[in-house]
Length: 175
Image 1 (cartoon, helix red, strand yellow):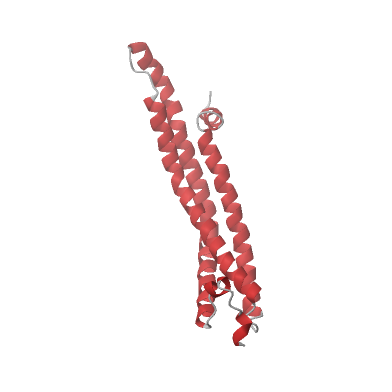
Image 2 (tube, rainbow, N blue to C red):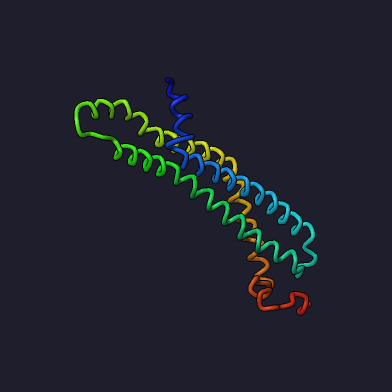
């Protein structure tokens, strides 16, 4: 049986948890992509139509989208860093499960050693794959977060704060 065949079989059996983590990471990656587009449009709209700095709906949307993109991007980065650890964990569990009580068991353990390393392989494969995907997003998302933060600071300098909305403050009251 080829290495690729063994790897593919393992992702649907003993390494299923890594496959599930990859699906979750792909979903979070998609959410980052959605937030990136939303934030980019929002910043562009604000810069193009900033004649009404006290528009409550726009202000709420700015604060909410900032929190969303920060959350999803941080979660995405964290998930990427977890893959190698999941791989090592799977390898440790597989090695701990090997029977080493007699010569025949040790001989069987040698042939099973490859199976113990499949989780490490999948952890590395997914970490590299998502790291490459992250590099596509990285400068763009970091830039958007910084632009978004600058816009929020600008709003706060103007006396607009998210906490004011929660206290029932009417942004149009001062105008």
